[in-house]
Amino acid sequence: MTNQQPNKTAVIGFLGTTLDNGFSETRWQRWRPTVSLGLHDELLVDELHILYSTRDKRLFKIIVDDVAQVSPHTQVIGHHVVLSSPWDFAEVYAELYDFVTAFDFQDSTDYLLHLTTGTHVAQICWFLLVEAGFIPADLIQTSPCPRPDQTDPQGRYQVIDLDVSRYDGLRERFEAEKQQHWQTLQANLVTQNAAYQKLISDIEKVATRSTAPILLIGATGAGKSQLAGQIYALKKAKASSTAQNKYTLDKFIEVNCATLRGDTAMSVLFGHVKGAFTGAASSREGLLKSADGGLLFLDEIGELGLDEQAMLLTALEEQRFYPLGSDTPISVSFQLMAGTNKDLRQAVADGTFRADLFARLNTWTFFLPSLKDRLEDLPANIDYELARLGSEQQQQYRFTSEARALYETFATSADATWQGNFRDLTASMTRLTTLAESKVIRVDDVEAEIERLTHLWGLSNSLSVTNHVNNGIINSLSNKKSDLAFNNQSIEQASWALLSIYLDEQTLTDIDPFDAVQLAYVIEVCTNHKNQAAAGRYLYANSRDKLKSPNDSDRLRKYLMKFGLKFDELDQESSID
Image (cartoon, rainbow, N blue to C red; front, side, top):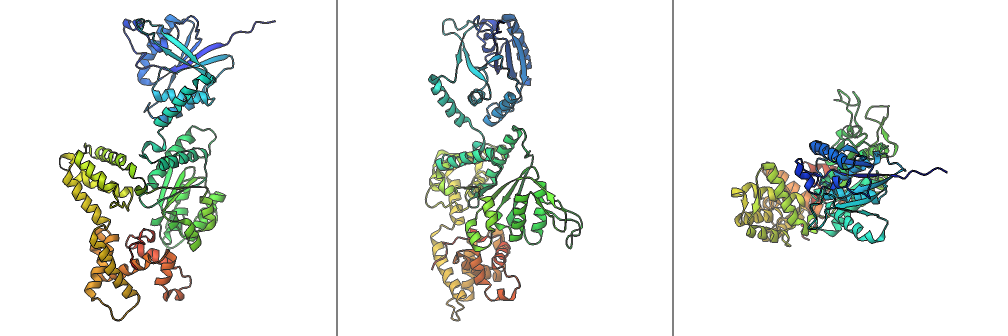
């Protein structure tokens, strides 16, 4: 019978850049956590694995020499790690995950994970990796002796077995701290709203566990593009730490479908070969091909034409498509995210969006709340905007306490509609910081900004009167009454009043009076119809029969786009019956 050799003991931990520090001989007169591991007679460490960064190379060499003096049989093995931000949870976890998955754990070795050194974030990550089974180890915690023997370099240690129920409290504490330090999607998404926090938590799970399309639905300015960028960063980090992943996600292609118009839409998305159409002097790759192996974000996907929708569906399901004018298919493999401010279910019912494409996109659908539904987030977002603008301008902006209170009172009141959502807030903070004297936002600055916002949102008392007058004029026009109650000047004034709600100052300056009256009438018709298709049928009731392929909705969409307008952004409650 042969005697079985006892298992070796190996300890893994970070170099303590603060607690292990010291280069003079006086370092031996105090407790140092890494060195103390070799000072206990009952704890024989055969291997000591130390993680350290390049800037701590000198300290690492000192620790190697000191451990050799106190425990000559201990083999010290260094592991170089790169952490640009040791307090970024996602970065630290990814780095440690890569380390442990590449580590050659031996069955003949008992492992201990040293929790004393490293940042709190690193300690949390170690704990999670051990608990999840990535590291077959118990935890070891070292500490100095209590007074009056705290200068004893040996100190104390405790081995923690996570299977013991008495450490459930520790596990709960780490879980709570993990949530506090979690820096993925919420890193730049400031929120105290419980529903939005739950939404972000769900998106985090989907982003790291699924490659199916993600659909973000929310009003204009609700933050769809910003969230899409955050999701991409999270997916990319996950892809880089997962072997055998067919998506490298080394590229993020974003396109606003509302900018794709007419014959060029197909070419922009799917590319074309030379000579495919008049003016095609050279071939074009197309955005879907550019997104191969990466992530494609199609914002305002509801604006795509039916033909483009059909080709997109083919590319998603068959992972191939034909560029314009080509008989040779292009193979692609990409992940898809889409955003829209439309109700795609209604668009399917209206025949402007394909039901099969909607079904393909609808695997993961998330509805983003508007700023008005997240008013508790306003103070934090104000701080975020001040810091962002200050960083851009290399300035320090701040409110006086009275000005801050005044702004927040208005911003959270019923008078603040935040029609443009976070874009309105960003614009407001930009104006305040630009006009503030000495970089301090005072009460008079806030009062002037409140007036601007009130005007922009059409909250003045005279607006309802203007709408009422305008409604009477437009209704008179639409009913084609011969006995108009107002003269041409009144019609024109009412038209300008209505357009001032929807058009920016430059467009208002450039538009001709004839176009102003016509556009005002079109807007009034739109606000009195449920959807774009119905409004288009009304507006083009006579001419539509003369077209071979009438598409009233598309004709109306193109007309509104000439003035930078969209049907879904027209306030359907501004019309008065």
